[in-house]
Amino acid sequence: MSPGKTKSVDLEKTRKTLNKNLNSTVKNFKSDLDSMMESIQSISHWSNVLQDTNSLGLVNEIFMDSYMSIDFSSMALYKYADTALRSALENSLNWIYFSNHPVEFGWWKTGDEWFLPMGSHPWGRGYEYFKLLIGDTRVAPIFDKPQQGRKTVSVAGVYSELSKSSHSNSLKMQTAGGELSPTYDAGRFKEFRDRIRDVLSLVNAIMILVFQDEFGKMNKLDKKGVTSVLLPEHEAILKSMRRL
Amino acid sequence: MSNVPVDYRSQLLSGLWIPNILKFSDMLGPRTGNKHYKVLSLASTDNEHLEVRNLVQNGLVFKKKDIHLWTYTHLKALRLVDSGCRVMAPSRYENTLTQNPQSVEAEFPFQIINLDFVSQDMSLESGRAEREIESIEATFRLQSENAQKPHCGFSIAYTTLLDSLPINCYDLIQRLNSHHRDGWSGILTKDFPPDALPSAVKTETIQRLLTVMAVKYGYHVLGFEGLLVGDVYSIVVGAK
Image (cartoon, rainbow over all chains, first blue to last red; front, side):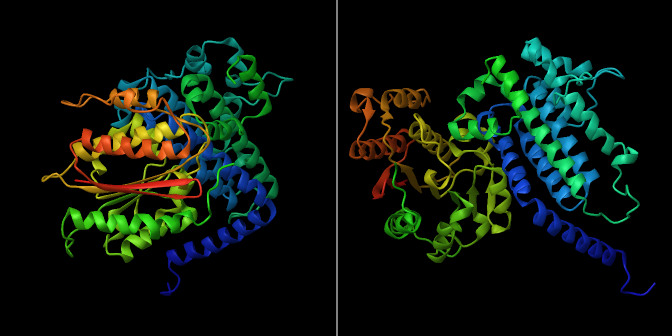
């Protein structure tokens, strides 16, 4: 092997490809990227009013998950973008769960396996925990998998879609299309753009429902930052429940 | 519509902050090459950290790692990463200090504190100035409770916007008095107007409240100086 051809050189070469992809994404989707970066700031707004929750430290992780998902997608790393976005969604739900479960949070922080017996999850089947916490059946479309003929963006639906990337569904593979190196694909970027919009709308809608007092205490700017990422269908549900 | 001059920070730096911080620093004791001043500054990435450059140029800070920059969003915090300074919790200062001061307690005390709330995106609504002032009360508390021995002094600059809304002194004083301190009898509401307005009354109220807070936490007020730039009011207090 010649001295120049080391593995680190290969990585640098890949970095050049990623930068090329980034340039293509910025050139074609600059306003979408700006809007995505603006919308992830909605997470920061919650950290202002949830200062006294035990699990506040998770907010940084949620932000970075979201930020990195945008970063990955801009470089055409679409599968990894989905994986990071799924982590953002999971950590957001964890943040809510742990804010009411300080003991479990303590276990989780030390890496303990605190989960319930095999096959069950503290969130419950079909996100039952969150539905009970919110205490209103009108919230079901936000969590349940959309029934045929209905297209509400829900946690179950989005989670399932993002999991296809995490579990390397054949259509979501990074090398789908036969390309080994990450290749810019406008269609896949658009899919990701829609997914991050869905995730942020879901997260903020659930946060409004769970932390209604804290949402009420938000200043106008933060409140606007949070409500501006809501999809019309989620906004309608919140309005029907008089939470907006 | 409030008048916030674009260059208000540079005006405050040359006309108020640096001269007064230098003056109070001299009163606090001689500065030597070995003496590190630890600085806390609310920072917006849009102003190129003017105050940081000026503090370094004037010999008040020797190492950037002694400067703690506080910003209120994660994106701004990320932009500050290569500043060489320590970047603190991305949240609004007033929220953290009043709701969760223990999360930043370990960073205190500081010798220079620059709380320029105008540099952050302010939400112009009722209760804004009251929250800012309450967070300054928490700042004095953290400074005092974490002071090294001997009890060290510090300079604190508070910068706010004098908008058309009054400062609700009655509610504010009740909140300030709710923070108990042994031997402290509390602030009397009758000594303050119920609603501080117009600007002259506001600035006087702010001056008096800041000096009262210093005394509450066992500090001797070395002096204070205020300056109005447009509708931006800034006051520097020296406490020992």
